[in-house]
Image (cartoon, rainbow, N blue to C red):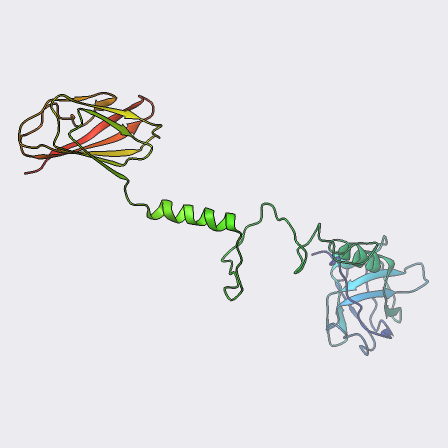
Length: 270
C-alpha cells in the first residue's frame, strides 16, 4: 500500500538516530530514542541522513517500541529513492513541500482556492440553494416538524390530484330517449330508464385508451330494439333487444387502436 496523500507529522521536535543500520530493502528502522515520535502512534514523515548522499524521505506507518514500520512503497518519497543507511544516521520528523501541496490540493476539492469559502459547485452545504443531479437518497427523512406553505396554484393542483384519486363515477341519467347520445368526456355510467323502441346509442367526446363506460338500461315492461353505433362486441355482445321488465348492465372499455368501445360484459338482472 502506497503512502497516503494526506500524511501526518510524526511529532514535534522528533529527532534521533538509527541504532541499527538499515538497507534500502528494509521495511522497518530501529531508532535510538522514540521520544516525540508518537504524535500519531508513530505514523508520519521522516527524513533520514539529512544533507548526506544517502538522504531519504520515508513515511512510517506505525511504531512498536523504538522500531518504525516503513513499507517499501513508503520509502524514497518526494522524488527520491530508498537508500541504505549506516548506524547513527540521523532521523527526524519533517513537513515537506509535497505534504503541504497535497493538503492544499485536497482542500481545493471542497474550498474555493481564492476565498477559502466552501465551493458549492463541488460540495453540498447546509445553507446555499443548490440543484442536485443524479443523486440517490437512501431512506431520506424530511423534518416533519416544520411549517409547510403552499401557493394557491399548488393547492389547486393538490386538490385536483386528490379529486382524481377519490373521484366517484360520473353518472348521467335520462328517460325514454330514442337517440341516446353519451358524452364520454363527462360520463362514466349512462342510465336510461323507460327505454324507447329502436333506441340508437352513439358516443361523443374524446375518450382515452382504456376508458371504462357502463350503460344501465331499465326496460319499462315491453321488449325494445337497440342499436349500438361506435360499439363493438369483444368478449360480450351489446343487447339488440331488451328483456321485458328487466334491467341490463353493459360494460365497455375504449379501444384506442380500433377507435371503438369494446363490449366486455352484458348482464341482465335475474
